Length: 353
Image 1 (spheres, helix red, strand yellow):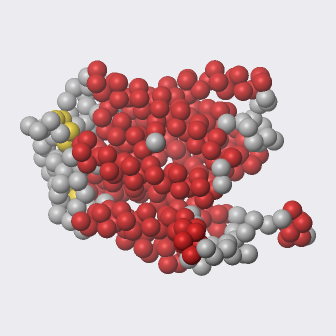
Image 2 (cartoon, one colour):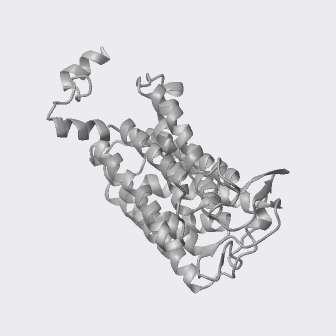
Image 3 (cartoon, one colour):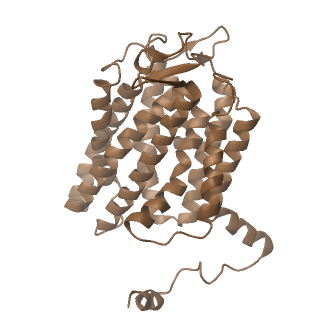
């Protein structure tokens, strides 16, 4: 549930995307540091290979956080949360390319449905600015594009980098000699996450900015992008909001403590001990809750086409994670196919031989 509040706290904190990402990970790291030191003393230190992989995964997660922040401000917190679930198709592709693990047959059918769902959810086929205030177009790297398209591009970048984080973080977990090292992997990951936001702040962003917000409140008290000229540069477009106030800082603190340090450490813990299908099902509640809550909280009401895209993405995620198949088996009472059942120890040894 803390994860479902993350995109909402990002928007409510109304702070420069790169600066917010940097504060989120650095302060989250400082919160975990004493716990990590305690874990090292009471258990053992994470091996060198595990640290290296955690750092690599953290660099990708830092790009993810920064891009995701931009996506939230441009296309909405609920929609951005859905786009993050691209990992369900990207991670299998990475394992197929790098680890030479065969993709399931269903992947061929899942991939095009997921792509269409992403385009629908991002509002790419709808009129510019529909449902959201702000400019119809924004420029980046000298290219002018629809705000919805740019926001979706940020969301796709976020999803891709999140997938790379998941891939390398799982690699890191396999190097640990024991399964109960939960804090250290996230501690090193969070420290590495600060690299990209730091670079972006002074190359494509607005520097370290904790005073000027991105969004403004309209006459109805709803947070929206301010009115600005079409084609404005992305750096200028995120520098015209209301001044950052105490309420924004409270949201940022909630994001750091609950959405960063607590949520990701609990995900690390749960992913080790829970059944993968159950874990995936629980995590699927996060974007669904975000979409539902974003409506009444920020007046982010998706269009009919966006709702269709949301349904398509969630259906693909649920199917790829085995949730729909498991539900169907419970309803029909059919046993789990032998090919999907976990192998016994003797069978595992036989396969290796």
